[in-house]
Image (cartoon, rainbow over all chains, first blue to last red; front, side, top):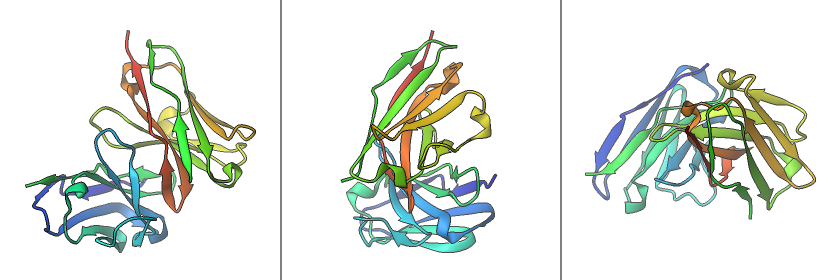
Length: 108
Length: 116
């Protein structure tokens, strides 16, 4: 199975700063099947990015995704209060689908 | 609008079984595969399995093989996940999720607590 390793584990930033979250795969992942999710406490995950770089419906344009092969990045250009949450990358092109362990984005 | 509404929280004893439901609305139920994902307290997301649109094909994570069964009732647009021989490590929130471009819609989650 493909192992996804996210870094950093925790990211402490201030409002208005730029956040860069990394997701590295143990083997090449088709970009078509790379997604990012946001999860807040007590809530289900919410799809942010699919196809490595396409924003899901209703996702603000401060969220962007990039990358290919084994290295993928989620960038939040200017942090808003509602962006502080846990973020997961996922690949679902190879069975079994796998998730990274998550990056917690906290307010500094 | 697309909605996935799951059944309520359950408390089970070790060795028992649990069956979680997920009722879909707002889209053509038979057009999408569905996944189940679980999340233990304070932990990450763990994929459990997938059921195809017609419900005649499933694929389960190796970890759950022999203990899980996923089904769907197209007449009621409802998905089911049954997990047997429960142990304390199965205490988690269980989610259903639709496979669109990514897992694009999720149920609200069902907390299953396994405790003697």
